Length: 328
Image 1 (cartoon, rainbow, N blue to C red):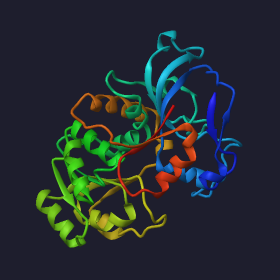
Image 2: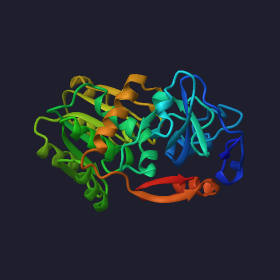
Image 3: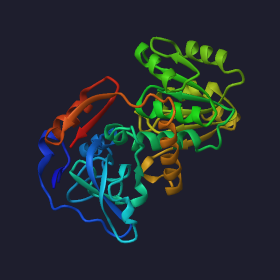
Image 4: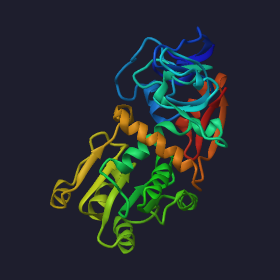
């Protein structure tokens, strides 16, 4: 098969190799997917850069955990009826060396999720990490039906999914966004109310949200823990909860006493290590969301497999929105 890989970490142009590898064979409980589209997420860029200082987890890495395509072979214990099934997959390069930046990928059968009719492979390739992270961030503290949920960064990949999933679950959904363009995206995803934060002071942001959410926010989905925890601490209701999945500062200060006196529960979420049952519930909910008026992902750029280095460089340099995919 054609594949893209690296055997050392560093700049994309210096480490990526495009070449041939043996076609993988599914083991017991596995399926093999002929990949049509491979999704790329910021975490995969950071792995290749060794941004976390963990080094090479395997001698050779085919990147990207998310993808979509058609099952063409199954391993022992998997029904042959799955052959020919259109699927999206997640976790292909989570604790595994070979991801979806190749013509074929092998994953456990449970991680190959049926792709609904009418949903493109490109859309399917965008679902995994953002969608599963969003679902966990919305639901980790318990049911949200009838409760207020604030999604910080409500127009990003995770944020847009979180807005849609919280709305699907019966929450009153508020989204905080940073631009006029983002302010148009969040309502389409399902937000009841949208607040812009660009150019506004903390006092203005808190005041506007407090005017919309009487009594405080029950639950917050947080994309920028270090930047927003001060605002979040003021907005959260007594007994509220916050789920954070990203931060720029790896060791941010935490306003302990304001959180303490409100009995706030904090959840820090790393998608590779969610429980299997949580991932399965997320996959089911994401397919249900795709059956609603949720607007799906904007595809910003498409690259070929031969352009894998340019794909990573583009994601590193851009400041816009929308998803980036590799098509095969």
